[in-house]
Length: 439
Image (cartoon, rainbow, N blue to C red; front, side, top):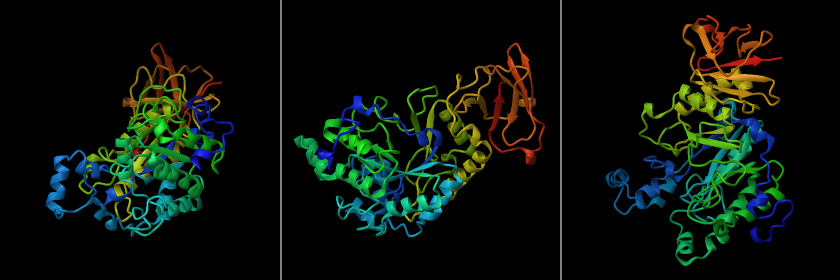
């Protein structure tokens, strides 16, 4: 299909593909959930790069972990039957994602290890139906998200490369393209046709050119002829030199966080576990972002025209750890109060306040209402803002609080008087959103 795709509005060139616009639903959504899950969830040590850390980099702590705990001739493939997913309940996951306030979810259908979470005919004996849980994990989650959380869009991550695929390694040595034509690109078409994801999140792009990957041909088909052509988007990880140059959404490097306005739509894909995308059994509590740190990432990202893709790593048996659940539930509670300052907003003329750190601005789509996301309650209940210009007819509110706030204009800016509230009367526990209405 890849070489015979009919070309319509979009041709298989970056000049043409760059004319594809990001769907409005994505720009409005702001918050997504990333899920890294696979055979790497079995050893759950080091990171989701466990296989390469062990056999590629030969990182000492990983090599020692294997020597202490497994027989000398143990292979990575022997982990796969232990990837059981016996507690995986797709409906419960979907409910959690909806409760978090996220508007899209992206599941790793295949990471760099090559193991597919769906019964791909191009990955025989190395997929979740043939070995491990004997289930179509992609299909179950896709169905559950659409049934339980219809306001959450479903997306799929797919790695172009596979570290130790003989076909891929042979391509690199002998300058062939069999891996692309017989394995990784057929998988992508299969995923889109079978599961209809509205996000195709590519990765594993860094070794080879777009002519090797045939990525522009796939994207032309995705935008012209695929069953999701009217609502789909993709990222920028399609070959060497493409990141932050082409693609619907720029993702740069992992945890991409420019901290300033980027006019091209971008995404901060980041992790609640500071050090890994996959589940780690030996994680310490201080390794996880606090809810205050997570909300700071949300505020800064959205203010600078980004979406945030928040990663959780389930265990091999399909459990999302309680600490991940807690962070997502806390995020959802915060968004119930302050979602107006996040969803559907656009960047304002200033991103963060000039005088007071920890204040990030957004504006609604028509620009009439401006929001200030205040990460810390001000001392003495007085907040100085230099970048907001209020008149005597302006009105100031705190989302979730039913009374108008007082303010006064000074030479250095505007001073907002926060209400004197006991803890039980606060509209939310962490970070507060001010709304400015300027006639």
